[in-house]
Length: 242
Length: 125
Image 1 (spheres, each protein chain N blue to C red):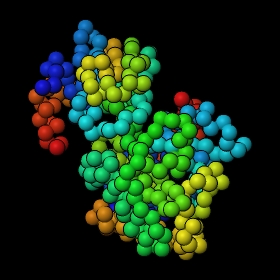
Image 2 (image 1 turned 30 degrees about the horizontal axis):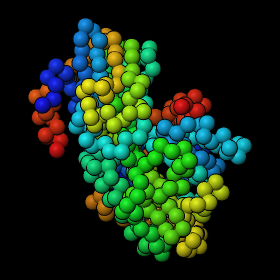
Image 3 (image 1 turned 45 degrees about the vertical axis):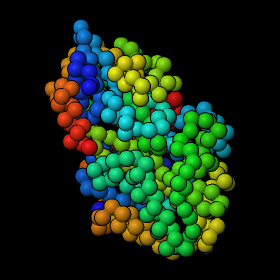
Image 4 (image 1 turned 135 degrees about the vertical axis):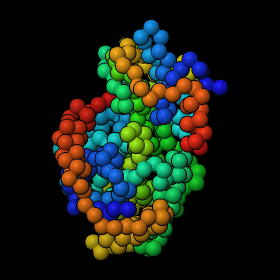
C-alpha cells in the first residue's frame, strides 16, 4: 500500500486529491493530510442553508462522501483509497475493521477510546448536522464524545473502488465543542501527532494485510486533482448544491 | 426470480426499454447491500445521461454510492416521491421504486439478461 504524507493544504485541494485517488488511483493508498486554513466540510447531501450561521469567511467545501459536517482544525486526517475487494463487502464491517485499527493505534499512543457497538446509524435530522454531534454505531468515542469521524464514497465503474476518509480530533475545534479530543488524554505536540500517524499507518496496514511503502501522487493523479480542484471543489455551484 | 423483461448491469441497475423509453432503477441485490438508506439524488427532467456515467447517488450507513446509467439519452421523468420513501427500494425495487425514465439514443452493449445477472450476483457472493 502506498503511503503519502501531504502538508496541510486548502480544503478544495484536499478533497480533489481524495477524489483523484479514488477515480484514477491504481494501487491502494493511505494518505495523511491537514487543513490550512481550517475549514468546514459538508457531507455530500447536506444543505448549505443549514450552515448560514458559520462565522464569516469560514472556508467551506463539500465532500464526495456523506454524513455530517466537520470543522477541520487541529486533527489527523487520513484517506484510504483502494479496490472494494480489499475491504469487507458489508459497509458496516468495513467501518468496524478500520475503526478497530484506529482504536488500537490510539491505545498505543496513550489515548483510551472504544468503538460503539450500538446506537443510531445515520440521521436525516438537520439538528444532527455536525458529524461529531451524535455518536452512532461503530463510531470511535472517548468519555467526552466522538473522537473519529469518517465517511465513504463507493464507485463501481470503471472499477469497484472505495474512498474512506476520516478525522481524528487532536484539539477540539471551536465550532464543535462537544467532540472528543486526544488533548483530553495527552499533550498534543507535533511529536505526538507524528507518532499517532505512524501507529495508524501500522495498524491500518496490518488490518488490510498490506505493507506500507512511501510514495507520491502520479502525474495522472496530480493532473486530475488539479482539474477537480478548480472544476468542482472550488466551484460555488457545487459547494452550495441542495 | 428477477423480471425477465428487464436488462441488467454488473453495477446492479436494471432497465426496461419500451417504445424507446427506458425505465431505470436498482436491483434487489443492490438494495440488500445498502442498509439504513438516507438520501437519494436523481437527475432533473431534461438532464442528459450517458452509458457508464453516474446519473445519481444514494447514501446509506455513511457510504455514498454512485448509480450508473445503462443508456444514453435524455431524462424525461424521475420518481419525485422516491427520495422521501426510500423504504420502497426494499419493498418493490422493480416496481414503485423506479428511479428515472429516459428517452434512449443508445444502450450499453454490456446489458445482461435476468439469468446472466443472477449468475453475476452469485459469483459476487
